[in-house]
Image (cartoon, rainbow, N blue to C red; front, side, top):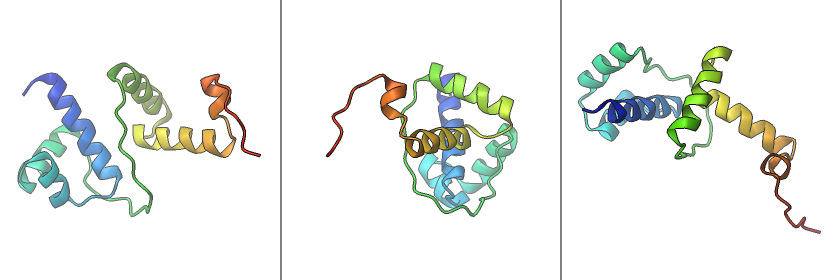
Length: 110
């Protein structure tokens, strides 16, 4: 398996764990047995334990360069990339910052 493919699979596993999927569901998604998933997660230092959080899920395609910067900031903050992305999006939406951040003018609904 190429390094890039392995990185993508590692990211996918982390996202699926963050989404609260079971080990069996994750294994099914990546095409492995649960045993293989557990070994690979152990090697990658990925915990398969679910947080029990209830949340809506969205999967986003993020360019590698952007993900790398997000990952760097998350590591410095001691949180997961998913948690940082969620916090950022929550703040942007709650504080109505979409237009300001993207520097776009959007017609306001009356």
